[in-house]
Image (cartoon, rainbow, N blue to C red; front, side):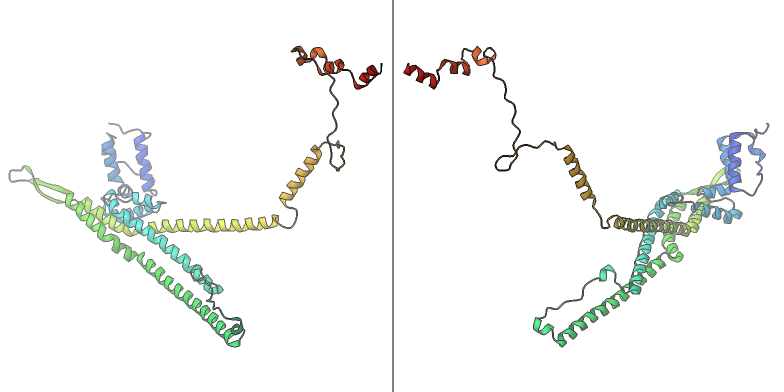
Length: 372
C-alpha cells in the first residue's frame, strides 16, 4: 500500500510532536510498518515507540533506560512551567497525586511563614539601627506620683532619671533578644525547607504508596508446559509501576522546590504591590497638602457664589416703612363695587348693602325734617 500523503493531518500532528521533543533532528523517519494503517491504535503505538520523552512529559515512565537522564530533564523542564501550586499538583502522576497534595500545600504555607519571619526580622533590625522600637515594645516608662514638696528635691529627680534609664536599657535588651529569637525561627524554617528535610518528609509517603500500587498491579508471565501449551507460569511485579514510583521519588524534591519558588514569587509580588500603594499614598498626601495651603476655602467660595446669586434674584422695589421703621407692603388698588344685578346675594332675595343704606335716611336729613 502506498504511504500516506505528507499532508495527512495525523502525520502532521505526529511530526509536530517529534519536532517538539527532538528539536535538533531535522527529520525523524516514521517506521514503514506503521504507514499502512494510521488508526488511533497504531498512532498511540507510534507515539510510545518513537517518543519516550512524551511519556515523561505526560508523567509516565520512559521505557527506554538509556534515555532516563534526558527524560528526567524534560520532566523537570515541564514542571518549571507551572505558575501556581495547584497547577503543579495537577502535573503529579495521578497514582501519587492524592498522597502528595497536602504535603505540597504544607510546604507552600511553610514558605509563606518563612517569608513573613524574614520580613519581620528585617524591620526589627532597622529599628535597632535607628534607635526606635517595634510595636510590641512601644510603651512609656513607668511614672511615679510624687508630692510637690518632694518632687522638687534632687533625690527625687535622680530617682526618676534612674528609672527612665533603666526602662530604656530594658527596651534595648528586649529588642536585641527579640531579634535573636526571630533569627532562630528563620533558621529553623529555612532548615525545614532544605532538600534533605523535604526528601525525608516525602519519601516515606511515596514509598508506602508505591508498595501499595506494586502489590495490586501484578502482570502474568506465560510459558509453554510439557505438552507445548501456553500456560500461566506465575505473577510478577509490574515493571511500569516500579519505574513510575522511582520517577516520582526522583521528582519529589523538584516538586517541593517548584512550590517554594512559586510561593516566593507570590510573596514578592504582594510586597511590591504594598510598597507601590504606600508610595502612591504618600504622593497623594503631598499633593493634598499643596491643595490645602492658606487661601480661600472651597466652602467660602461656594457661600459667596450663592449669596451673589440671591442678590441678583431679589426684586429691586422697596416697600414703605411704618412708624416703627418696618417695611410695609404696598397698598393694592380697591376693587370696584359689584353691581346689584351681579351680586349673588341679591339673587337670593337679600338686598345689597348699598340698597339698605339708600333706604335709611341719614342723620342730617332727620334733623331737617324735624325742623320743618
